[in-house]
Each structure stands twice: as structure tokens, then as C-alpha cells.
Image (cartoon, rainbow over all chains, first blue to last red; front, side, top):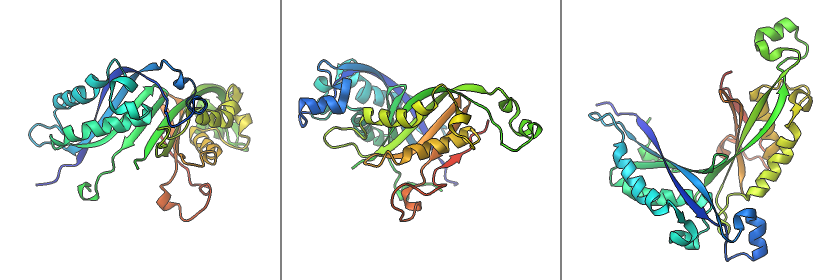
Length: 150
Length: 159
């Protein structure tokens, strides 16, 4: 049987949250210089958009890489529900000690979705987190050489 | 250490005209059509600048936003906004391809670490998008400093 080419699905979810850029590792002046307005004490918020990309072969019967309802359930459970309408620094344990920069949110999303996707036999390919329409961060997970499909 | 790419969008408005110096008006019309009309025309340009790096372990940032804005505003936006690009770039046909390559060169050496410039995307209109991308470091040879001429190469996106 011929191998199916790998197809990538990208699904978008959104959540709204407050955050503040501040690290105790820097002085107040350094925090203000590095983070600018984002360091203001009471935080600010964004309507975040998260694009999650998964890779896999197309199932010969269903014609799907992954059932989007399953993907939605995972994203809702581990991304949207814990983060939506939260103050990331205070309400999400990970961000009590990790500055909730767009970069760190992208890594966090990758870490929390990877395992649940694996349970469906699905490889997480990448995460894009949009803080605004003018700023986004990409984290792409390189495929293992043995997984690559020519 | 996990490498991330951060993309930030900048905007400016500028005039331009597509014309090769030394060609007849007919030759320019044949190649560039309306874009070669004598009075020029303009676009609301959008420039996506992408840098790559590992987030700083203290700040959690691949690059400080204000530092990035300063670089791109000084080197690209302020030089081009509300100007004629043909004046800004004499001798260069101001196609999206050439703009992408020029902006890549203007910016490249300012992102001298730890974040590295990997792509400049020029949106001339919503339908015309041009990328100049850095070649992977493995194919750059053992150069020191900015990539050699021709290193950022435009991917033609059509017009």
C-alpha cells in the first residue's frame, strides 16, 4: 500500500487574558526599560489567537488526519479553559514563575497540547500565538528524521 | 533550548513607479503595464519582520520589542514613509521583490544577536506578497558577519 503523504491541519482557538511582563530577577528600573508599558503594575490584556498545527497521514477510511472535534476538545480542555479570562501571572501556575511573554505562552501551549495529541497518535507540528494582529510568535517542532515522509 | 520565531508587522505608505531606466516607454509598458505610468502610484505597504532566537532566560523575550521597533522604524519605516520609493532607491526597480531584498539588507546587520533576521515579507497589496529569506546557516559557508550579496533571495509571489 502506498504511503499517504503527511498533511498538516491548523486549528485556531482564542482566549482573552491579562498579563504583566515583570521578573523579580531584574530591578524595577530594568523591568521598566526592558518591557516598557508591558511592565505597568496592574497588567493589561489581549485577545489571544492560537494556531495549533498537527501533522499526520490521512486516514484511508475517514479522510482525516485527526477528527477536528477531538482536536477542539483537547484545545478547549488544556488551552482555552485554563487561560480564558484569567490573569496569567496569578491564575496559571506556570506563569507565576515564568514571564508570560508571547514567546513563553507559545512554549507553554506546545507543552500542554503535545501529550494529549500523542494519545490520538498525532504529532504536534507547531504553535503560533498571536498577541495582536501585528505580533506573533512561532514555535515549530522539527520532525524526527525517521518520521519524515519523502 | 528551544528556538522561536517572532514576527512583527510595520506599515508605511509610499509612492513608486516600475520602470527600467534606459528602456523606452513602450518597453516599460510591455513589462510593467499600469505600474509604469509616468506619475507613479502608491501603496499601503505592510512589512512583516521575522527574527529567530532562543528566549532570554531572564526576560522570556527573543528580542526586546522597543529595540526591534527602533531598528525597523529607523532603517525602513522612517526612510520610506510618505516618500517616493524611486527617490529612496535610485537605480533600483521598486518591485516588491527588490524591496524585500533591500529591506533585508538594511536590517540584517542590526539584528546581530542573539536574535537573527530570518525573513522580510513585503505586502504591496493584500494580493501581492514578497518574501526575502535568509538561507539556512548550514548553507552559508564559514563567513563571518552578514550574509554575502545574494544571500537573501526573493521568492517570487507573482503580481
